[in-house]
Image (cartoon, rainbow, N blue to C red; front, side, top):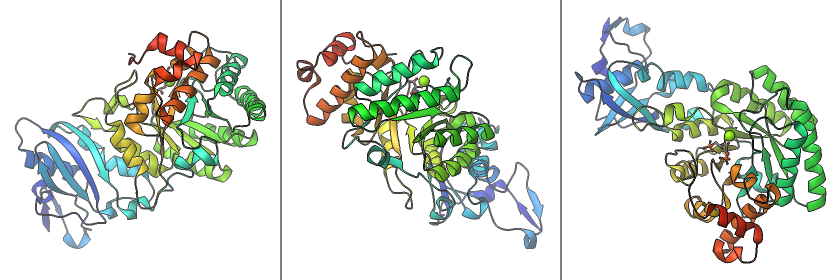
Length: 416
Ligand code: RUB
Ligand code: MG
């Protein structure tokens, strides 16, 4: 018999193996606990230990203990053996690394900051089908950012009013029309009518302007309902679906990813509710980790914030985007989406901060243009093209009245 004490989970000499899942946490230990003791409890509780010492027959035990192997101030590194995890199950991984430890009294607070994913875990997931290549495989964005808009008001527009907003935006130079997160299948704007009419409008616009356009229809619902909606998108000739990945859950995202692969549809991931657990810097799960999970599960786009230029709080957008673009055991890169309070007057700063391999999405910053949606879309496209050519927005506005009007209204201010 052996006793498993939580001290057994601390080894500051341990070098993580390349097969380990390595997680970094910010920890504030409970008042009566040392950092070492709290770090051990985190490794213990999230792998094969518990609050009490256990008495287990060694012959019956597979050694799956995680190791708290680094402490640097409040930063704690924990290495998890890959055999702890079920292949291809994101819920199971999160139940370990973001489970009981988030609520246990051994820590006053704990935040999962970052993960280094080994090949053995990544290989169990599909990753994105298209990723950043949507810009030119499914659209005609060339070297510029993909441009998207979400009709406002976000709910309440009838189907035909919604489609009119989309059509005006596409004709003004936007690539993607996106449903807002609160719009799914309500009586004022039913899903299938909106889907059919929006895609018919998309086809008309494409024909007229000679650029590919598409529609990010919000399929978010109970999983079986989502699958029906994904099938409908394919039947109607759409190229993308939008899913609110946190509210519907990772197992549903994994299921939808499989069905989207059957149809060759790309996935735009919205992230409503992320701020419920990533907004504070000392507790929860970081947006960086959420973005990593989304990439493994196979979304093609994900919202990662605006580098502080929009209306919502963000953590490190450039760092998250660099991870989404970087190498991860052969997974396709993900196209990061900047959204929430953007308007033409901040596009140059946004591209300076985040580069061009992004999607820029504006709602109020297009439809709130004094001359309406079509002019607002033109202003966003003008600002984007000027920024790529290295022309200042003010200089470009001398040639383009839509951009001039947007700059008069909003300047380069960051809204709230
Ligand atoms: C944008 C909007 C989106 C945000 C969410 O509207 O409604 O839901 O994208 O933000 P507007 P994030 O452009 O009028 O602010 O991208 O941070 O997830
Ligand atoms: Mg929204």
